[in-house]
Length: 544
Image (cartoon, rainbow, N blue to C red; front, top):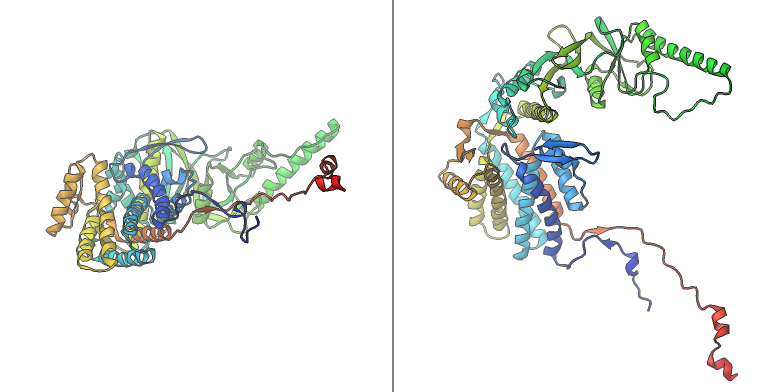
């Protein structure tokens, strides 16, 4: 029978088929959020656990940072991918807070499902959540009880940001980052994070890390020229330092020894020509991300060119930003060369680095050289340093600080719950749902600290009911965050709340999860086979 609509095979295929009710559709997104939060929740807070992560490339990474874990996950559920992307975008903007976004979004989706099951329409839920968000963001500035002064040492403000996941020697590393940020700060109070570089060298102890004037990158000179003093002119190359790399697919077809001699002679002449063009263009330092050919290196030594091979492209990109010269995809001299006073190798224990140094107080870059005995310790220290630099950059724009250790979340929950209990209509339950979701964050901190969650939450609730909004979660119980110097930046917290509500409203408005696939072509009916018709004549034909 031929119907008027398309066939089932022509329709988009449901990814997760189920009943057509609203709460079931929301439950599908909520299940993905639950699964993602289950992975991230044990890593939340300074006492969170570590994950032994095996990446898609087979590399084993020991980390407790949600950003690294989320970035390595291969997700199939579209709701989980949306939530992961929102968390990573916030972390890229603020330096940290990916776990906060995932956990609060999961808690808000849980409360949203309860409101839908209670009969609240989906449109009113979105409006009520938007109203609760505006109310929460309006309350945040009133909780900012401290701010970083323009002439104040930022150590106390950065310590709680960097003291994560039981980092060893956190105090000495925080002082080093505070010193570096202070020296890189402009006289007018502005701060450019790109002026601070991080050079991670394996070997030694973390307390042997130091601050170097200039820009340092891991590596060492390749040829006989090991340093340039008295005016370095730098070119950056993201290609092989030679004619053809060792893995190039090109193959020379030669038929006689004479052709081989001519080929080698032509190759040597072309190599010499390339290096001479670099020298005539004023290049005396070549930084290469790629294979360095021995003949080209020997020619560079004759021309007095220092050749440095870096291991990562990001180091080449950072050099390009600081030196103001482009990264060349071919072995050609750029129109604008990077300039500094001198370039020289620096031995730092078991590791070595190449330092680009300028003269005078207007040094465009400083480098934090990190030392650690293991690769995992070095990675954790590097991540903590980047968190500290990002936090200082935010404080230079907005110096206000909020109570940390879950105190801000509990204070907001108390205020929102009081307002929600007095309101009628959908806004009241939405404020109560927001308050309940915010309470889940200090509860997670207490759980990861190995404390009795019910007792800690009861003590915190009683303290906040009496107006002590500086009470948070510590190692042994509740603490006064002002006395313990545990703070969060207001700018990062506000941005995280906006990111959470945006993704929650998107997932709460999802009607159905479908997977659009190209349907296979429908086969047409070829009709009756005439040979079979001859073998089996119809009864009407027999009568004739």
